[in-house]
Image (cartoon, rainbow, N blue to C red; front, side, top):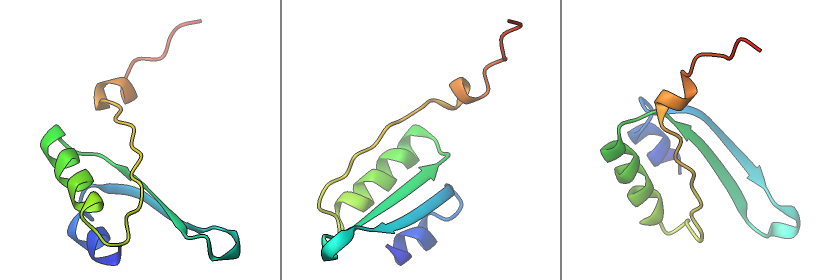
Length: 72
């Protein structure tokens, strides 16, 4: 995963690594900000690693993150 962090460091806004109990494995969480093509390339790279068992992802368009707050 370290190589992936370096390859995509310009896109990664946050990354955390958590170890599960009893050597059950680890969970990597990435928050990236990128174009659709770069997101797909990132996901494909993660899926292609020997370390990857399951890849879960949620894509939130940047426009939603920059929405104007309501006046309520």
